[in-house]
Length: 134
Image (cartoon, rainbow, N blue to C red; front, side):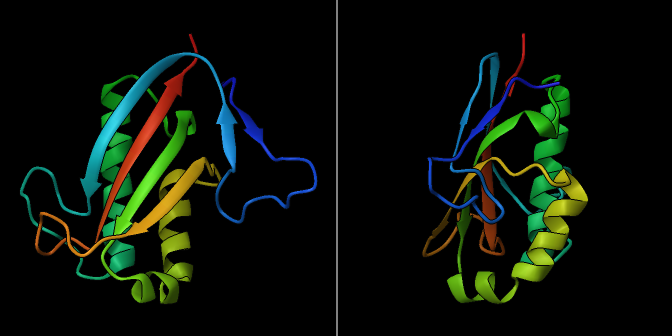
């Protein structure tokens, strides 16, 4: 159970696939940016953006488990993508990958297009903040 309160300003529509803001209390877990590779081998099992999103999210979930946290504790995510058009044209597949890992939990999120990532084959890097109720 979480104490998260998702904020929607009066008169604003609900965010599509994200929360405008989250208010909560608890122990904070900061997850460094995760790329869509297998962290044990350093290899990218997928070249497509949606596949890398799914892997990056699974990496985040594994880190949260190690920190005794759950995906439902995520309150904030920032996605760094290398190709805006690819992101826009892949939204259906990205949404499927997202829901297969995190379900219908949609925290506050931002997406930023960057020139490149440190990992040359990386197409997305996602960082997350989770708050675990005390």
